Image 1 (tube, rainbow, N blue to C red):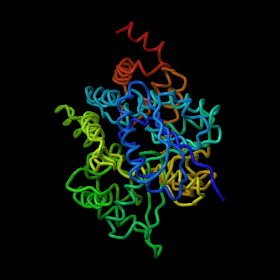
Image 2 (cartoon, rainbow, N blue to C red):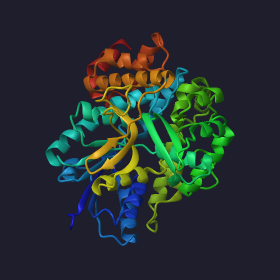
Image 3 (spheres, helix red, strand yellow):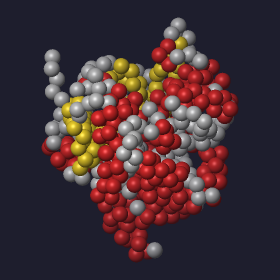
Image 4 (cartoon, rainbow, N blue to C red):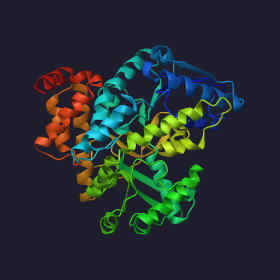
Length: 468
């Protein structure tokens, strides 16, 4: 059977991650009959789009492929008759992320890209944009799959389904892949000889691990690796080698997150393995202290990333460069292609492989409603993800999971409606934000700081500016 060439559109095509994406597509060129790839960006990202687009074209040429690579600022032109649409954009660019981190930290509150106040505001900025994209897709490529890598990935996927009424969407993250590699490094057992089961939310999932004899290894991993920072560093060294890195002491692909030890007794009692981002909830004060120390030195993660990106784009300008440079691993997107490209490959070829994705619960986690989006182990088919049943959590993770899911739902509703009260409810229910007068003070300051990218809050912000 001869398949027609696939048209793939990447929104946020000027991202520093794009070479990683092209590497993944090139790796799968024998399985995916790609005809054209469109890289889309906005006027502010035009220069980066041209730089990274030129590199992408050189990569395709060096691989001996005849794919057409188009660069455009016209989203509608790109989306027409697309088969797959991937999203990797950042509303407000890295300057917005810097505000998300520095404003909370200026009040002695955690500032992080996808958690706490920063994560909420990233959703507020992003939800209106992703819903506009979905409306374009309904008209121009109604049969396309939307593969979302834009953070906060789980909330954006939920918004697409709940308010965009678009079910052909899958949310992705590289963190589950990293967790699998950490387990392999901890046990010294090849990844393909282990069986994994994940459940929870994006950046808030837990997992279990079994070996090929059927013996569960979760408790062993918790004891040997997650209970102290030195052991975790050893496991991360294995991940670095898997990614082709060397000589870097930071966590590969999770450089957003300091490698601080969990409380051994607490994680061992869990019996299930937390993800890296759980540190913000299990050892909040330790993480805050680390962030405040960096903040005082003017070294928030966003500022480090901005410097790294500047260096990357200087590398990308090299006309002799035709591969993904190893320095991209410092950006923190390790294994991105293994998530995004393999998902497209699995849907297109009905591969029915195991992947961890954000998708509709459909009974996989019995502690949450069927219609909400969860991040869960799934079998990927031509019809999309089929979630694998997890069942119910014990009281401790169950309570946190239900709180966080409802926080997500309130955040998305506020992002969609521009309702100030709903926005305040999201801040109030979030466990990383102190409650009281500081709640409104922080939220109001962030609303004004991000006003350019919050059209749904326009009237609210105008009133706040009058008071100020």
